[in-house]
Length: 131
Image 1 (cartoon, one colour):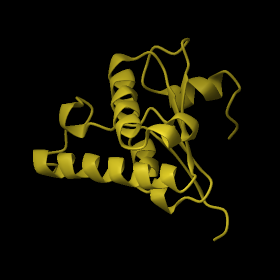
Image 2 (tube, helix red, strand yellow):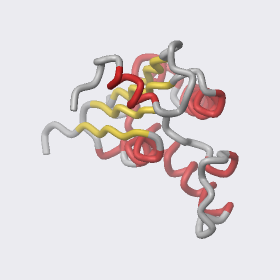
Image 3 (tube, helix red, strand yellow):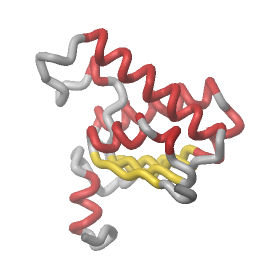
């Protein structure tokens, strides 16, 4: 396809970032979980530490590839501490691997009036998301 964009919320946002290298234009991730090994929300028994670490490595590699090919990543977050930790980790990794591109292609949108993980729900309640 000529125009491919991805969108996701929470682990769906993580999935959007995981497959961001397949996008041609943009990725929108709401409160993505990047570091599954240290996230209390990820409690599945079948996700071993090794699986979580491989997931994170692939997410970073694919986001780097997306940015270097011109895809813009829009990451929305509230003020919830684990969400800010996830996005800070993503910013730091991308800035160290592709510093020039990440400054232009990684857009962190912080919603200071949201104190919880459900940023997409928050934005919909405020009338900023339709659907």
